[in-house]
Length: 366
Image (cartoon, rainbow, N blue to C red; front, top):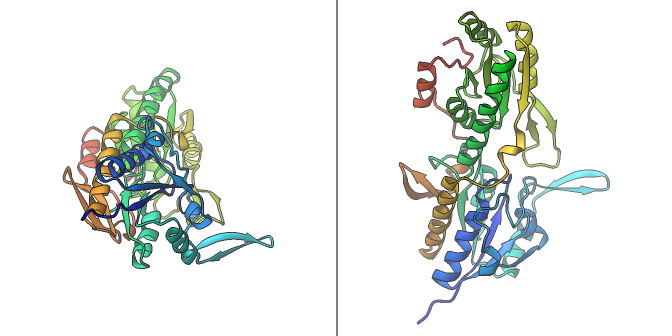
């Protein structure tokens, strides 16, 4: 007896990220060609399932999107079905709309929901699984700070973009004998700053996991000048903070599930270092350029593998799990693992040791 064809939904939540389209393509094509399933694309993350916005995806709809940045489905980083913000009579009201979402999922005929997202999206996914909607998660974040997986797609692209920017700033810093402060993304974890700083030859790398002292950073810059190096490169994650201090908050978005927006540490550091080190200093904030554009070959391959593995999980009836990479091999973990908080850089990480060995400072005086 032939099995009934499943109807699956694909949703991308949280911030955009290079490689999402590669995952959408892999899930849709594997579902259509390998299993003959019906595929529904949900618009704008959880917002689309809450508001009832979706459409059928066919093979032609996902053809040619492997190399595209962003997501053809759109996304949202403000729609949490369990803490949904709506404007009513001029004020923001938060409430639980998960029942509406589940009702819409039944209306769409969804047997399985594929969720491409970070810890916030996957935390809600774990609750949806508990509430009766079968889900499979795919890890997504340029920050690489998701528990349960060694690497997330989008990270390699972000590091490549940041490294290229550092390379370009190296020449202008050297020409003008300046200190260049390069602010990269990384609210809670400094994976991008560490990798790009090491690859780009950063003289100082500042990450959230290692609070810095401005005196130590200035001392590093002065020491380089004494040794004939009239320029320095400082790579800083947006969530880096001084000893005993806090990260720099750029804005607060009240309607967001995660309202605090960090940013601006680069300009704060530049001002402080110009005074403390006595060196002309400029700041560059890479910001959302790290999220955009064509994904690297590594991210396209990883996204395709993860999408295929997610479909295989669903075909085996193994719901409530996220596909992951551990020790170079594909595996899966329960959804409550990535929901358990950020994956931080341990102080004894080999890349920190390698950076210190070649003279890189982390602003801690070590």
